Length: 277
Image (cartoon, rainbow, N blue to C red):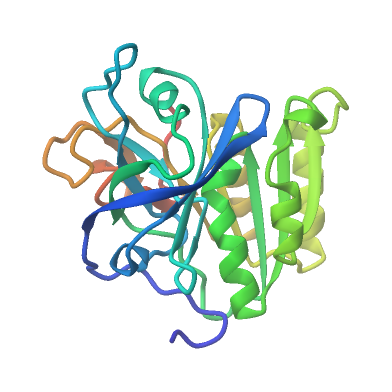
């Protein structure tokens, strides 16, 4: 077991193709679905930030050709459960949304490199919007296991679009909801909020996922306050194991721009190295 307050960089781990059984599948928020699977134990050597490659069902109306990468929303090794939170947005997720309890689903994973927590970290801050909250949810689970303080800044268009609020609170996080409709999610207010946490010594590490706006904001705060951070990136993929080069994108490193694969070197990267898209 890892020592308290430490989540080290990912080591080489086994990748498994398994068939899981749908335990629950329900609406979670506007346009989003929560899918929970019963899977074999070998597929549950997971860490926050990793993902699975899902073989979406094929039927007369939906015939997705490629697998779909999907971030892990939650995992429970003792119960043998693996869950995903996704938005119905295309052929693949539309096909996935038709699964019922008892149906079977083929998944490959866990894949990629996950988040890290520095040895001396005591206060973690998560900043995400929309489905990006699903990617960060396992960090809350890990923070509770390690006994760390956690604040989750959850952004959405309106209160009814906020996701995972109860889930984060149940894991012991202090949830700070911000929304467009209430005028609390603009960059200036978020910057003030994050600066206040840094000044109060309540932010040792910052994590985000998703939008360019949040990326730029977290980069600026981290750079000015000397606080490290990580970002989980989303990218279209074909193979998800690094062979097809479909998910390559640029990063700033050592004064140069380098090209790396989101599926293999990521999907989690140093926040200061990530470039806008």
